[in-house]
Image (cartoon, rainbow, N blue to C red):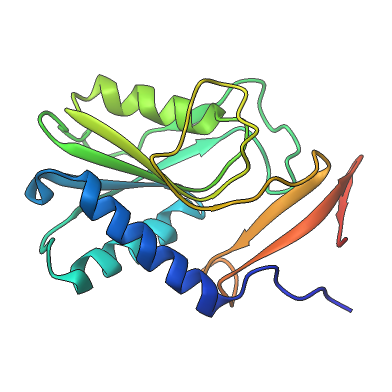
Length: 186
């Protein structure tokens, strides 16, 4: 039998709405905002944040970009010894003078976030803020999320598994236990 979600869609929608309010308080000039989602699950979360920012009426037009960054598989198996960022085939964005909000699903060790921050800074972003749905508070790098929807301090062998449409049918958070070469439900 599949374990129920640790957090369900209705609860997480409220969390994302609160995150959007926190973002509004952080952004001095909403007209210069670019929201960047880290693929995979950070991108649809960025879309959800943008939708809440639009609903609030303060931010009419938001530039949206995605970054493809990989180091770990969803089960936290190491895919690459270093964090890899794959640039899209199109022209690199000019972020000069822009405020960038970088969005990801989970802040774990911080490697993906750091790689993305470097890339965004190289493109001239005037200010970079970070937002994550879940902060595990175990980053190994000197990074923090400016906006964290939830703080979940789970055991090292546990995985915070964020389900976000379109990748999964229901928005939710599940906690799984990682074992040597596979993942089991707790």
